[in-house]
Image 1 (cartoon, rainbow, N blue to C red):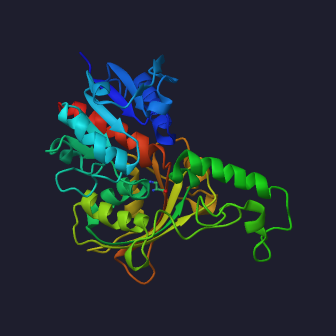
Image 2: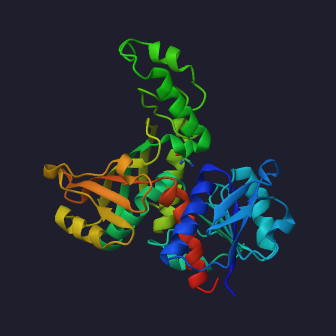
Length: 353
Ligand code: 2RA
């Protein structure tokens, strides 16, 4: 019999994508490994009906019993909910794949990106596998391939992160903000009038429509944000380079879906842009879009709703033959979240759970 998969947080921004991705992959034959789905959410959402694998399923409330008969559970819930409930599910024999930040840096929990470190999936003493933050994930398939060839020594990045990184509330807020400024050609040329028109400092820390905000996540020590620390810690763990030099500035931009990163990557040996393009073309999960003369480079609006990590603007640094500069874009809700969880689940099944 085929294993049963549960989606915990089935009604959220990522949960909704998860159901679509599981269904698509089953229909396409790439992820046709599941014998059924259990949809789990907060008591508030219990009773709602959602479609998965072409069937209507009723959402059930998160209780220990909700995991009875479940083999794999994909958690897409806030950190504190995962921290409490992932161990409860794991104790009932469920393989938990957790998207929150609760377990990512736990040495007994693998942080898996199937294109980069697939073998770590079976080394999970707690029964929990972690899925990385969307900003880190966007870069990993590409950087993993380059690292295998040239040995990564430094990773310097600026992110351009979509509003949907802040969940459904972020999506709703950005659409509302666009509506508040639409058609007004007075805005954005003097201090303050965009703030007045948008009147939403809360969601992103400053208005996002007509703006960019150099803050994603929450403030941490010494002026760093939680996102910037995740980029550093998670990249090191996934790539298996504990002393990798990493610095980033994470920025929210007025895009609905699709995180982008301007990356400067430094390697142990000299690199070559054409060789990098070839390597990336052959790398699983990566699509090269790099023909500037023909106007071809990746942008979020083309990445949204698709699976690959797109890489373009690939060039060797003018002042350092061991460094590459490039622009990387991925759908933060798909490879950045739901798709990577689905791929980890399929990998766990392929490795005999
Ligand atoms: C963001 N990476 O983009 C976060 C979501 N976990 O806000």
